Length: 497
Ligand code: FAD
Image (cartoon, rainbow, N blue to C red; front, side, top):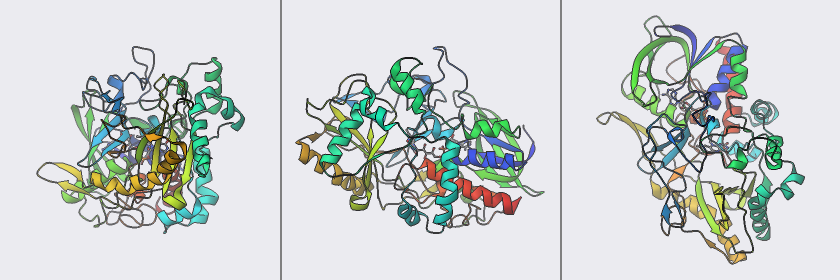
């Protein structure tokens, strides 16, 4: 592909990039997708493509020699272990004040995430993206995204009896006894497949604890949905292990894109250039923001505006565990796919997923990932002397998230006579306040771009991923990222091609 001239290049193969590729290809446009991670289509020596959560190996982490598990400790003991350095699936990218978890590979975050597919409440969406027509989103683009992603709901009757959701039923009981609304959360996991896992008739994935490092069966990642359809058009090519390093106007029009081809050690084995009429930034909130602040500061894209890099947030993510009484076991068999949440957004600014702790043993613990209304926003900037993009998020900025989560869990603990677990994130540390799974923003819609993701100052450049969303979605973000991408690409195809 070195020296190739193509109509459209897409940087990244997550939600935004996959939507762009499919819809452009359907409109008759040839698309080339560049992805820094691996293809994840070939089994390893154990016959499986993905490693299990409980036994991380080389496949599990992006260029690390030691795992960096979101829950770093158990009963006070550190649980991280050495792994060979490899272009693995989960990146725990460390900035000054926060570790940002992201998927690496063809399918982006869909490879590693919980598949929780939540459409926010209408009034909350309107507060997040006021420039977007809410009616159009809820009438057209959210339904289109849900259909494209294969979102489905758990059978409520099965939920009541399934051994693997004992932990969620305990979560429901505690939520309801304290007066909080408990809501089922749709997912892209194939619930019928999970029933068959429970019945023992198919290979286990969610019921074998698979999640953070990929699901071998059952989960409809983008590889099974948008990307499969995109490839079936015959117009989409994907190059894995290709990392974009520069985009700059080409002499004859369009853009010159510079790409490092890397090996599984992360070393560059070739540097290529391509020319494209149009380039879509779909490298994720962090990937797109890092590229844009670098390209602006180094003069490669001098006309980007002052909003580039700004408006970044963590979707208010904070984790915690509660210690239950011995008469409230959460189960030694826990489905790795969460299916429920506690909604205290309107009153307390928190929506808490009842999350699994799929350790294979009874822990008497309830575990939660809360999404909270955190007002802090950070900014990416280019550090020229260090040659890298930096993010100015501070760990102390999680305090509003902790306060919001406490509106739920202080009340539950008081009602149940229980306490927080202090052994999951260190020794005597209650809050997992050092991380996010949900990076959002950095090239915010209607600020760094126009109202459809066209970057200001450079016609033919677009942002179409989580970077467009200003730091929070009030729920898990990927349905909103997908729906917004559906909206924007429809306009771009109609007006710009
Ligand atoms: P991504 O999906 O991050 O895709 C970006 C892609 O671009 C990546 O594949 C990356 O490798 C590639 N890339 C980056 N830089 C470059 C470059 N320079 N050159 C080439 N390629 C590049 N959300 C939910 O809604 N529900 C959940 O249950 C959920 N659970 C999660 C659990 C975990 C552990 C994690 C990490 C995330 C979870 N999320 C969840 C978040 C969700 O996965 C992300 O919001 C979503 O993937 C972001 O989509 P995106 O299109 O913006 O980018």
